[in-house]
Length: 374
Ligand code: ACO
Image (cartoon, rainbow, N blue to C red):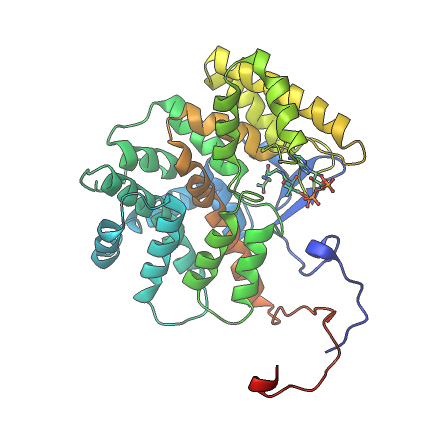
């Protein structure tokens, strides 16, 4: 197959979909969710309101919100066979691998059918339940029943710990979930849309998206940001630690973004939230590491426009709400379920199989020698 299109490594600058979901303006540092600036939503609306916006195209009325919350609360019951599979997983399994396995297991009970809104809502409601089930299993604890009186964020924290979260914890996690819900055609959303474009089912799309999110160049960064904070330990060590890391050609986690050529607007909002909810000493260390990292990156990569990305302060919020590091990326998935499902539904409504070209740069055809003559 030949193509006249120019080769773009990493598909940078290539437009492969039209979407009404979200717009990233990387030059101006803007993120728009279906007509709303992220700053107008984060801290002002709940995760469920944002889910309604993505799935139905508008922020809900009070009655619509109550309806959606009830639907999602009822959908939290996970089939027994899936909980049994959670109990069979080795306790040392990475929670992202557990989530991928359990979403796939949920799909085993469903025949192949085109993704629809009710399955999207159900699966979104079930993802935190799956994570909490696995987390309790690995700690030798019994599974908890979901609480219908708690919203998505609060019920997730409750099902993990068995304790009702404080309003600050629930609100902080809710704000985080709002901010991570969608981000145009990022790698995992693209993966989900590619799978949807083959007329596959929702569970397969989400299983693939979870696999893509797991990588440290995408959603796997926030726990590594906290690893970096821990390795640095105190402000005085930051410069040497980061210089050494860059000299070894390592990447500083929480910095840089394919789309943003200025600070990620979500990082600005999360920084303000972290200032409010994190311990003062921890926040001061984080801010010092951010400033040092930016200075060193601009010095060592003067041609690259590398700024703070969403993962940097995500790690501080998830730390503040008491989540263990290995649940940071799965919690990103709890949020991104909304964006993934909204994009999948958008893909199937106006579908064409996504099938790009590759430029063949291998050898020209030559004779295939018989086995004993090679
Ligand atoms: N630390 C050190 N160097 C960096 C960083 C970083 N955080 N980010 C980019 N660079 C350098 C690269 O080494 C490369 O330099 P080189 O050509 O001299 O090797 C140059 O900048 C360009 O890098 P690319 O990978 O081509 O840039 P791209 O735009 O594709 O990268 C990415 C974006 C992958 C996120 C990158 O900035 C990175 O690896 N960041 C660290 C990991 C991270 O924070 N991931 C979370 C991203 S946010 C999200 O997905 C939700």
